[in-house]
Image 1 (cartoon, helix red, strand yellow):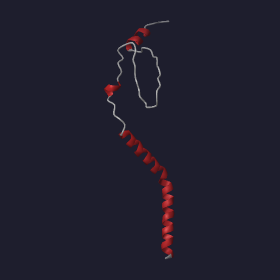
Image 2 (cartoon, rainbow, N blue to C red; image 1 turned 30 degrees about the vertical axis):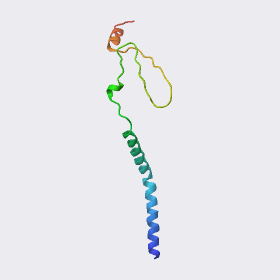
Image 3 (cartoon, rainbow, N blue to C red; image 1 turned 135 degrees about the vertical axis):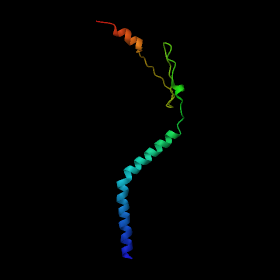
Image 4 (cartoon, rainbow, N blue to C red; image 1 turned 180 degrees about the vertical axis):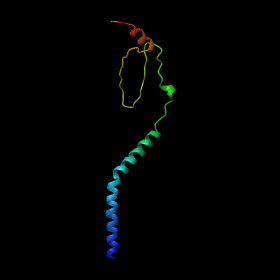
Length: 92
């Protein structure tokens, strides 16, 4: 009967060593799995819904990140092909 107990103890020791060897990979696999599941439940946005009207002098983009009320402004310049072409003709 002593041999059976020693086999069980050796087997449990082997499992413990294997667990600590594979634990980081198991954790990474679970992390990827739950992230993938989270993405599966996110609402899908059609590409046509995210294209703002940029034909006028201003453009408003609204984002709801679910982080409360807040706002921000961003100023930029016109870097269209025509703007770059006109400014490329200047010589100093």
